[in-house]
Image (cartoon, rainbow, N blue to C red; front, side):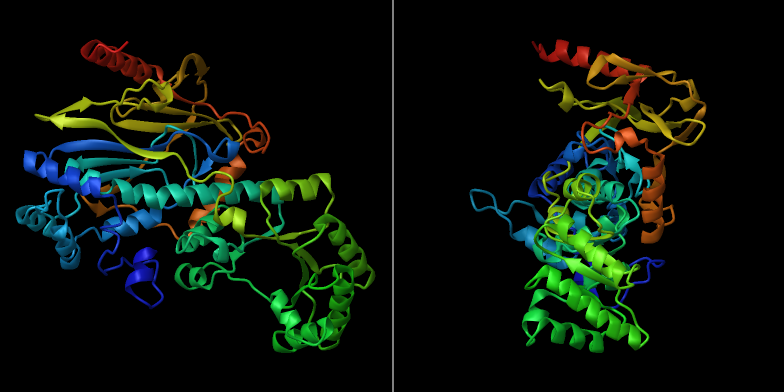
Length: 503
């Protein structure tokens, strides 16, 4: 997506593999290159390693996350290579004494470096939960380290937005949802917002670049300035109807909302006389519930029962739920901007990327990070993630297991943060969530279209019980370690505590 934005202007064909250079190679933290350099200096660059990309906590006080950003990561990895300009820049970085930080032999190594890792991933658009790896990267440690920041950057934010969008979709039901966040988004992140909100369940976007590059349906009619530029509100509506007779959603709150609704109906009748129709009216200020009821009554009485009432103005899932449930608003289309684009009120997904195993002399050695906070301790080893279902296809629980464990052998899971919290696994219906994506640096899975990813998110959301989707005090979905993996982690913890004499 971003390679398209920075490197070429023609509309990409999503079925083809991009061939342009990769502007994201330096879209990373310097410490990744510094560690890569140190690995290379130590002769460790090709040592096999296993990393997990996961998040620690559900955002927005919720109980789930919609995974997003994987295809952006695929695009980045397909074009993994350093060009001359990037290497020249790295060659100019100096240490505190003014000496060149990375020597030329290392830069020559990077110039010929080809991505060769294996990657397993949970398909984009899946519902996922804390601690389970969304990606598992296995390969030379230098390569696996270099890609950390970029993968987190591409996946964390899009997953956050897709989750916010899904929460809004849950409360909006079958209403139309449109993403209006471009003008308030943080720069070019607006393109990610449009993509991720579409995955999360929105119907379209106002962002034309997203429409061009990603094929997302675009929407837009007029602003208050259009009305103010004319001698009267009626003149403005009539002029717009003459210019775009099949795209008439009139913004009715520029001067007086009740009068604006009447004016929209007057022009709507003119449209009907010419064989067109009034698609909708939009409310952008004032008491949205109150004016929506007035609008519905007036529209229905005038014979415009199919005309939609759209609302915008600082909306999010909580406001929409209040308007629909508590206030009885007659709104059936929503334009959501600032609070979706900025993911108010949760600034970031707690995604991390941690080493879980390293190979020495042909033998895998499991690794884990210890902490005074149990929530920050990592899960060791190469892992599998299994999801169990009931007879109706609804999610029951997820198990994080060792890669040699089989799902039918797991009969209990243990909460990663509390050994006293367990859940029995009795279902014989399950699937493995992690699927092979790259093998020795080559993409071996088919890239999903954005439409397919959106459909997967909708199916996944449907399979999640409503108790996990409610906004207030959602029920925690059970995710745990297999008893074998939990015991293995406890054993490693005890060994480390003895070694480092932790209190």
